[in-house]
Amino acid sequence: MLEMMVAELNNNEHRHCNLMPTDNSNRTVQQLADRETSSDVEQVIIGRTKEKQKILSILSESITEEMVILPIYGIGGIGKTTLAQLVFNDPKFQDYTRVWVYVSQEFNLNKIGNSIITQLTDKISNIPTKQMLHKRLKELFDGKSILIVLDDLWEENPKELDKMKVMLGLGLGSKVIIVTTRDGGLARKFCSPAVAPYKLETLTVNECWTIIKQKADFEDRIDQEQLEHIGREIATKCGGVALAAQSLGYMLNGMRSDEWESVRDSHIWNLSTSVGHEVLASLQLSYSHMSAWLKLCFSYCAIFRKGQTIAKYDLIHQWIALGFVEQSRIFDSMQLCENYVTQLLGMSFLQYSKIPWVSYNTRRQIYYILHDA
Ligand SMILES: Nc1ncnc2c1ncn2[C@@H]1O[C@H](COP(=O)(O)OP(=O)(O)O)[C@@H](O)[C@H]1O
Ligand SMILES: [Mg+2]
Image (tube, rainbow, N blue to C red):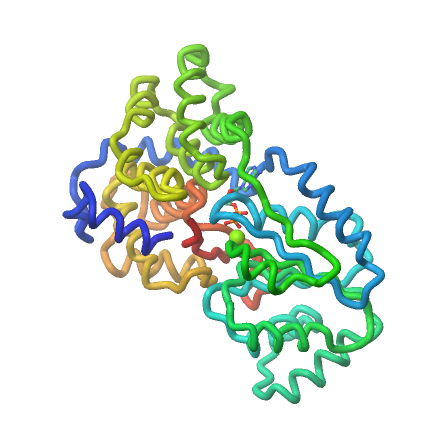
């Protein structure tokens, strides 16, 4: 997402988007601090109940097989990972051994195998050879009922996919594999023969509006009547994509009604007409409203790989060392950086790591970048 945004920004009115702070921000330090109170990083999920039930029923019909693979596919930011999490955490799977693997564009079977072993043993695994990896996985899989989510699969090479199937199919026991991917073709190829891949549809305008209201603290506003129709029009522009609604809602929080109107009427919506352009436009809008300092800190995140897990305080120290943090008499650099992180999380530009195990002190210190739309 970040690469795409920077590329788009460079092509458009933000041609001069360079890495030095400019003074185009109308947000003060105090405004930034005010936003900190709404650090609702654990997001409330709107809708998707039927979708979750459908997936659970597809799975329960096929669970007699040794291994069932069900891909969920759909455009970026629509909520595939979120839906997979809902299924992952459902009580139906409470007796299962559960493993969550973030696959990403860099497909590496060895890494996937080691990630599974690490989660099953609670010890970091770095087994170098395929033979040893398979031996260990077989031992660990034997006799268990296992649910594995392979989140964000891009690999199309059928040979690699077959090798992964072999690896996942090791050992005796029942296995449920849920895969999330954007690619319908890949979903069909990787799916178990007995099931059809699940296409996740966009959210309704109403659902997008509910997300926006929630992120914008709409219920606390006294000008609700004025905002309602503008907000609904903005919700229409989200193209049913949750990520767009999340980031727009966060941006609209605290804005006056005329500012809501200018978001609705922004020329950014017309910059492209390609499929999914609404998402990119929403993210560009959010980006354009960031303070110059926050833009700088966010742009710096381009040095990380898509989906890379980042230790929060490492990132903060890098921002400070590079002079990317504004000077303030009220807040120290750490407080400002905490606030930057809160804002990037609020806009879904950063997300909490979904990796259930970590080698750091606390899980709360870890984030990963979402370059996903
Ligand atoms: N139904 C929903 N209600 C509220 N927020 C959602 C919903 N679905 C997804 N989100 C949020 O939208 C963002 C993108 O969702 P995600 O599941 O990562 O999309 P995908 O995996 O399809 O790219 C995340 O911040 C997520 O929390
Ligand atoms: Mg995802």
